[in-house]
Image 1 (cartoon, rainbow, N blue to C red):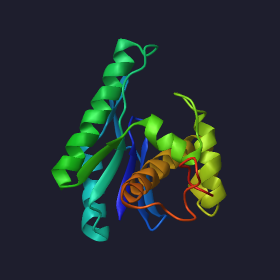
Image 2 (image 1 turned 135 degrees about the horizontal axis):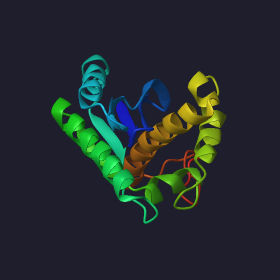
Image 3 (image 1 turned 45 degrees about the vertical axis):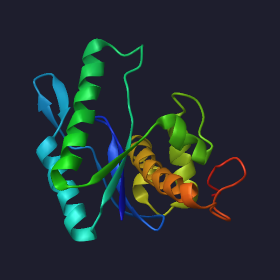
Image 4 (image 1 turned 180 degrees about the vertical axis):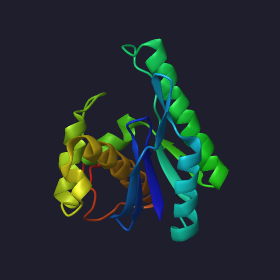
Length: 176
């Protein structure tokens, strides 16, 4: 069992096993005055549940950074969320592997620094069309990113040791 995490207050986490979505949740948040913050305790509880119930051992987390167009408050909030996610994974004893977007998106032929978020959702719908959340644009986009981050982590680890016959095409992308 592996976990994929799309950081941020509008992010999500997905629990995967053998390319199947087992469970997911949207990033838990709370209101702190005018700002929304990632809820560390709720995140720890959910990750601990997955670790204990499903024996999850590793979390593949998107390695994020602020964009030049982000304001300082937005960049701080995003960084705060990334730190909470790191701390929560550490607190429950999950191994953490960071994956840059420019490394996970090419596995699925998603392009650009800010690739269309719906492109990932549409790709996931082609593979997991029975998952209701993927049919919802906002939530589906976050969960799709988390799924693909998890899947790319597995593919990256597998590709290091062997070529995945039938799963990865010549350009290194997953075949749907």
